Image 1 (cartoon, rainbow, N blue to C red):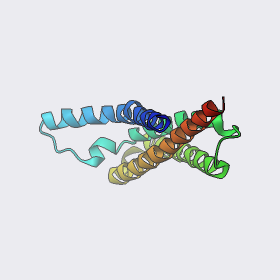
Image 2 (cartoon, helix red, strand yellow; image 1 turned 90 degrees about the horizontal axis):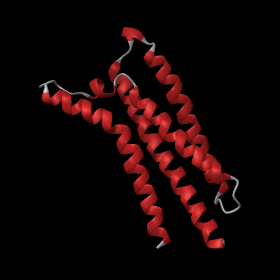
Image 3 (cartoon, rainbow, N blue to C red; image 1 turned 60 degrees about the vertical axis):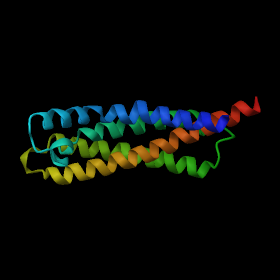
Image 4 (tube, helix red, strand yellow; image 1 turned 90 degrees about the vertical axis):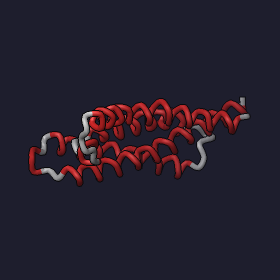
Length: 146
């Protein structure tokens, strides 16, 4: 029963965080195809807004990870620290890259911006999922001890 709860928390997090973060892009896609426009990745993701979703996902997950990182049942601590560091790096890189893109002007290559932004988003989903899984694992162990 506990394992199913862990899976449900992770699924709930994905549905309410990741899917909602992608919702504006889905709406833009639907509006574009309803107007008969050719929809490309550059058109949807070339302005870097998905970087803001990456920053938010990692920030929320990192905050939850900090809550349980000092717990004695946080195992293995090296992996917990590594995932936390990865999340922090994604936040920093995404923030700096978005600042550059938002003030970049016309000389930016939107296909490169879209590609880099999507990769950072994918990595943020992976590291954030690991953070959520670790926090749920620690919470479950602490509940079992009490």
